[in-house]
Image (cartoon, rainbow, N blue to C red; front, side, top):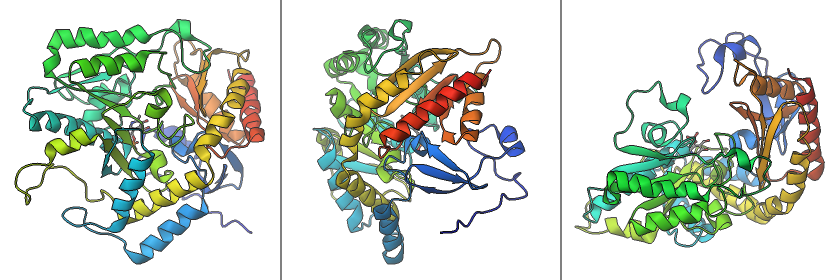
Amino acid sequence: MALDLKPIPNDLRAFWMPFTANRQFKAAPRMFVAAENMHYTTADGRQVLDGTAGLWCCNAGHKRPKIVEAIQRQAAELDYAPAFQMGHPLAFELANRLVDMAPDGMEHVFYTNSGSESVETALKIALAYHRARGEGQRTRLIGRERGYHGVNFGGISVGGIVNNRKNFGTLLAGVDHLPHTHLPENAWTKGQPEHGAHLADELERIAALHGPETIAAVIVEPMAGSTGVLMPPKGYLERLREITRKHGILLIFDEVITGFGRLGSSFAAEHFGVQPDMITTAKGLTNGVIPMGAVLTSAEIHDAFMHGPDHLIELFHGYTYSGNPIACAAALGTLETYAEEGLFARAAELAPYWEEALHSLRDKPNVIDIRNMGLIGAVELAPIAGAPTKRAFSAFLKAYEKGLLIRTTGDIIALSPPLIIERGQIDEIVDTLGEVLEEVE
Ligand code: PLP
């Protein structure tokens, strides 16, 4: 079939691109015009292998028939229903499906439109939950250095990526941070690192400093993605759970990346066998196709709000597009695709091959660490002296030229291909990346 390639617009000025070097991009644009399964098509007709599942979101690959069909059908049937005080069947059906596949203890679903909104929602629910139980003094929120929880004010306050915080004022009050878990002695680890469980004990210090009875919630990514793929040290998440439980503090797992199969299980909570009180999701929920997020909560949290006169709203929170019908249809099509094709199990099955392939890059120039788990991995490069991030960005540009999409953060190359990837395509990623590393300065 002839491709209908769209020419690059003449004028790129108006669009202020997110998290992008705008001037660099507009001087040499990189445009995708189509996608199918494991590949993007560029405006000049080249195929680019997707090594990142878009932005960690297209876990089932691209242009998947069930999802396309679900969206088309839903748009022609019920395009929108008011999210407040009205319902539509798909929102309930999807919530039931999510609860069925979620780790034990997750029994209710609150819809959002993105990972950032899921985080804001979970933080607000945590504060309101304690207040509803008569513990309104629990107002502090604890995040972690290097954490990424989206870009809204709650998320950047509990987040710990300096560039995402420093230009935006004083942020939320009453926030503190655990130390990050990136320890040099864990370099070259396959799977969970040995060292670092003790870093969770810092929560005891923070609790003692502020008074544990003032802390509402701790939020962490069970595996930190955006900062450059940091696996939780063995025993670390278990310790966090123990300490939070002991002090009546809620534990929120931000699973915007780890949800929906990335580690070879539905959720990281299941993968690591640690049960949080809330899980934030987005991305893979709709395969990235329609913006949607969801917060999963325990029954205990939900039920704390369900009292007082029946006609009163229990939680003063929600979005115009919470549970949008077309987003729900996309999510149901996505979950069906994951289930029919056994994609989470497939990720687990491919993980050892992925691990070996990735670690074969160990001796390439400037590589100082490689780490992996499920179908995610990172290759960390030594920064160029005086020009941090430049080496990895050059690698990104060169990989794109060679037909491979990678993602970089700082001087770390992050890889997270769609879970439909074939072994031959894993080889292709590693071979291309190997060439790139040989060639970049
Ligand atoms: N939380 C985590 C763990 C993420 O990785 C991301 C995005 O990468 C977000 C939240 C924010 O999601 P969004 O960009 O959909 O707002």
